[in-house]
Image 1 (tube, rainbow, N blue to C red):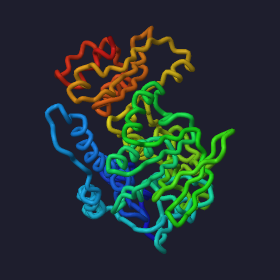
Image 2 (image 1 turned 30 degrees about the vertical axis):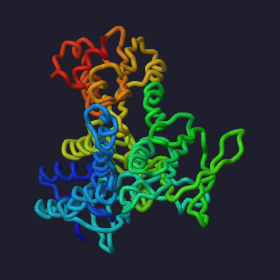
Image 3 (image 1 turned 90 degrees about the horizontal axis):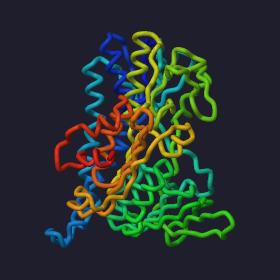
Image 4 (image 1 turned 90 degrees about the vertical axis):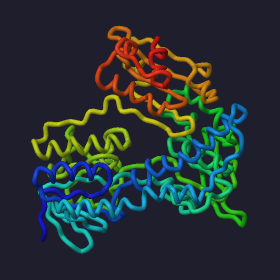
Amino acid sequence: MASYDLIVIGSGTAAQVAVAKVHAAGWSVAVIDHRPFGGTCALRGCDPKKMLVSGEEAIDAARRMAGHGVEGALAIDWPALMAFKRTFTDPIPAKQERRYADLGVDAFHGLARFLGPDTIEVDGRTLQARHVLIATGARPIALGIPGEELVVTSEDFLELENLPRRIVLIGGGYVAAEFSHLAARAGAEVTILQRAAQLLPQFDPDLVGWLTPRFRELGIAIETSATVSRVERTEDGLVVHATRQGAPEFSVAADLVVHAAGRGPDLEALDLAAGEVAVRDGRLQLDDHLRSLSNPRVYAAGDAAGVGPPLTPVSSHDAKVVAANLLDGASHRPDYRGVPSVVFTVPPIATVGLSEEQARRQGRKFRINAASTPDWFTARRLAEPIYGHKVLIDEDTDLILGAHLVGPNADEVINLFGLAVRHGLTAADLRSTMFAYPTSASDVGYMLA
């Protein structure tokens, strides 16, 4: 039986960071994954998605500048755009395996499952571990509706060779917003069926309201407070049936139905009971150090841990915390202050820190600087009428409590506010900073005036 100081289940961001740190300290390490090495973000999530977004950014820029010195029509060639994406994703698994081989890290392909509190089985082999890191990521939650087998995942969408004409997205969060913009600009007819009363409920409702007209302009139909009841196949494709409280059932025809209703920790195949790893309501029971409450040999990081926001930087942060605890003793805790979150629609919407509702619930005394500002230079030079901000500033300390942005380069500028929230910078600190001009960052001072 092979023995290791650390066995990592998963090969994504959290796994890569943890492996690098403990291996550098001289630990023996094994990595297990039943899918191509590289993880969700690099292969099936944020990175390939952003590669595809590059195509729609070019289309949108040409549309906005039409009549302002730019002429000629552009269109997305979906197969060619997908081929561009694969120039990034295709080399990753082999590159990752070469890296592990060069380091002397043993890599195993197959489903891992616990045989005991310190024993893992993979592909018929039994491995013993001094410690185990669960970094298996997340998977789509079950919809629990008839016809669920007809619904594809976001990962399937990112591998489409050709784009269907009619697309229905079940859910109204990050994935639905991003994929709807991309598909609509590529020529598809898109409908979003959102169970909640608001699209993008994790974001400030005022800013979502400023962004929503772009969905309408793209021809995206948004049905809120709509609960999908079933999906069925017909001679003409698929039909999605949905209900609203107190209203008759309605249906939407589609050629493709995409699951965009949320993800949860991917734990089912691990046989955690055999590993004496406690789970409640589908989530690992962890202490403040990301260690299993029931089996101190086992840690978790990233989406599998389900503690911090389900974002790639959080996975990396969790892995650093776990590695420090493994090497120094369990005294390190994750710190999720100031983690920015972005929806890569075109234009993007971004948030960091407290929402207005959260700040009020906490009883904070704060002022709000908020405005829709399509007349500012950043918006005007790009012919982009969607541009706005809402910043929450503590009245007593002048600290930035939260920031919410929508419009050109919001995905970049939000990082400045993230820096302020995480490191305790005040509004005065940001106002006194001299940013390059004219840039979107140079608008920060005006957002705080």
